[in-house]
Length: 115
Image 1: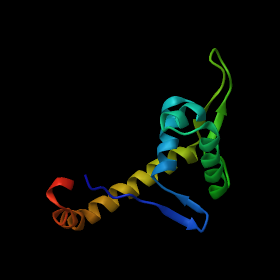
Image 2: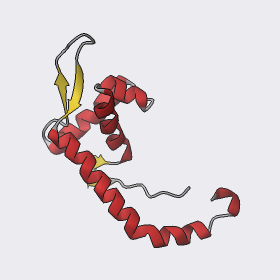
Image 3: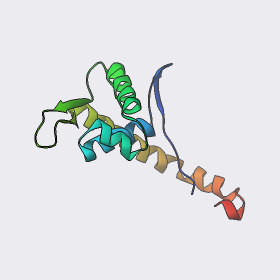
């Protein structure tokens, strides 16, 4: 399967891409940074580092803590975190549509076993 992967660079050490977006999606689905990271096979520390990078890039939080209950606290996306997912996925869809013809042409160059 041939797919297009989008990474958006804002500067030398400031970027978003499929990994950070997937982490935000998993945090939204799982309700915590730890569980979101685990769902992607990463440690809590690594997940937190990625969230901290996003907070630094945008100058405000992408995830907010939720106060405890029966299971303790957790995390939820801020409106910015939700907007990042939405905008990134829209960019991804637009780029995929724009590149479809060229992607098809590239696929025809692949050996039959690798398609």
